Image (cartoon, rainbow, N blue to C red; front, side, top):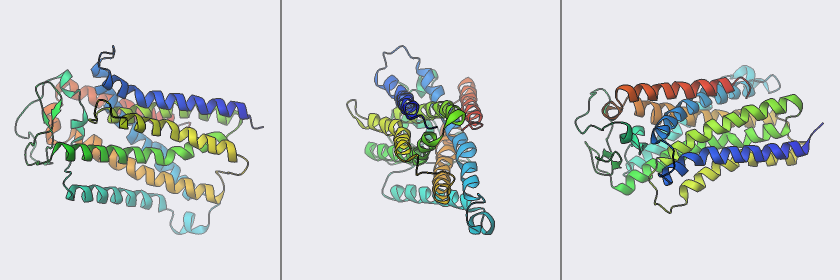
Length: 328
């Protein structure tokens, strides 16, 4: 039997968890006098990188393959071209690269993922100097200041105005959020149409999923440079916090009509998850992981104990999110 009150309670549980998780890093950034160590933001940012990568590899891409190769679908999907999920993910990566190239040609150059960390200098000194690794030459568009934050002056070959740097950072974060939100609506719908023991297991798993993913996105939003009174970071956190509950609300309304195992449901969820996996794979591996650990700038700003801590945070985030994948 379908327990409507229980599903309504679940909607508010997910709403509260999602909003709090995504808003927490922003609150800490906006109110630095709070008794929260800045080092926690440093760790949460890298923890979030692992979460996002595991979301793409463990949650989205396998689900896309499973959905698009289901025996209930026409032979094209499961026999003629069973690799469709991978193809869609690949195309979405190319589209993101095209979007970034387009905006780069308009003057918004590449921004290092490591430069998003407004608290990077709190844990250790930043070095000013030539790149330490010749094999990876990206434009250094931000420059560390003695206070540990990053100034918007040119460094190396970068010639970007502060507004161009901010636009580039915002674009990358919006693409990251798009990859997350794109599949969240269907996560909510799947939760609302589930019943019995499956519903309870899924609720617990999705609660952890939303919490980890919210912290991951929130830490990246918090690292963007907005005005002190700008509502943009709050709107971005609210968008994340309300998307899955919106899917739950839709599921509540149409739980008698929507069947995730139908051909329409399988194709819709499969394509959506494939697109989202491509977006998150590019963002997680290229924009975040490679920039934070393999760029020239990272070898100057992330050294010794801090680099080991960052690596541990990435592995920890990926491991926990992969564990959640056993149930959701």
